[in-house]
Length: 424
Image (cartoon, rainbow, N blue to C red; front, side, top):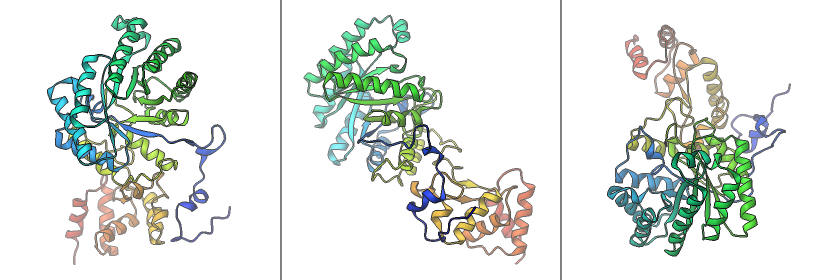
């Protein structure tokens, strides 16, 4: 088969369709296309810090994370549960004041149960900070949760309506959050959603609280909700909030946006209850690669992930997509050779894609070639030249000989030890 005739060094994004055959866009469903505007909502500072293994960050760390979320174009952020205690209230108020004082574009939301006592602190924060705070008031709606709590549908409806009516009276926008929506009966959801819409709810959040749903379930639930809203005639938004118990949270979030959700939630690094929430950083990466993220610049996403890991004392897994240490590292000779050949052609675009489905440069990273037992001389020569070390034949062979004795990649210190021991 004839190869593409484009010369190296002349490639850009317009060439990718000829260089990479995209099976993801063929037959079945076709390319993912989001035909309307959508928003991204961050839950790192609320749902994220409910993870049993993380540390609730200090306020200075929270402020830095807030600014970084704003810089990458996240639309809204849950700044916490102000009704959870004195420290929680103080942090929420400080974050809201920071948004006002620094004129940040990101908008604040607060979470609480469908109880007036949980919403009253949100009203106080809004008034003291001088900013509108979206009330995200939640209650379980599934039969299994009702059985465990001894809740009837009538009781759930009563609490929901009372809480929403109070928030609306205080002049705040209300987002009605049904926990465990993905295991709730359609007749119950219909009754609850119609009731809260009638009492002024501006948004409905569909929650996959225990990570139960599959993409088909996402489609069915979102379209059911969209049809109900259309029938009501009210301009109510739909949010999607997913957890990752089945490993489907990211793809479910993208399906939700495709099939009618207006906003999707996530946390940085996917931290959250049990195995965590949908990873907002992974959602953004995939939307960027799908061409659906607009002008948002994600080069600051890597520093944000590092900051969240540091502030919550939650190390980034070494194999974490895009932002883990191994995301763009290789010590395999064949892989490294292809990357090096592309670089030698003067084509950074090609080098960043020939052995990577994610171009590192678009996310503030770079391809990294290491030396190990599966490496070849090209790895060694590249490694040396990257560090301004002349890879003579004798030196390159000495390093490779040492690498072949190892059971893992050599550290920089181990390679330098061979370099320093080599004769002048």
